[in-house]
Length: 130
Image (tube, rainbow, N blue to C red; front, side, top):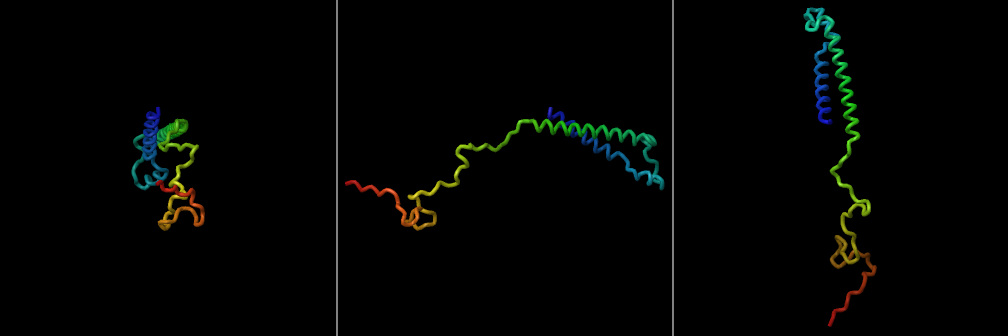
């Protein structure tokens, strides 16, 4: 259904472009007065304007209807995404694990831990077994 409607839409748009380009402007009659030759001899003296104007109107109506129907069909289509949703329970994943008292602070001297100076360092180290 979508493919047929898109093909019809493209064909009507191309036809509309060609029909508009085939029409002569309003100022073309002024050029014919000064020896530009006879214009509109293919369809007669008045037939081309009427025929092409009716054809333009029909193509414009078909173009508007296909545009409207395509927009309605695509707005009702199920939406998919390539981005996987995150679980709302845990929130966003942390960039780095939090520092604990036993881990050294980045950029600190080798003997200093992540705890502020003078803070207790946790449980005492176990005594070596004999």
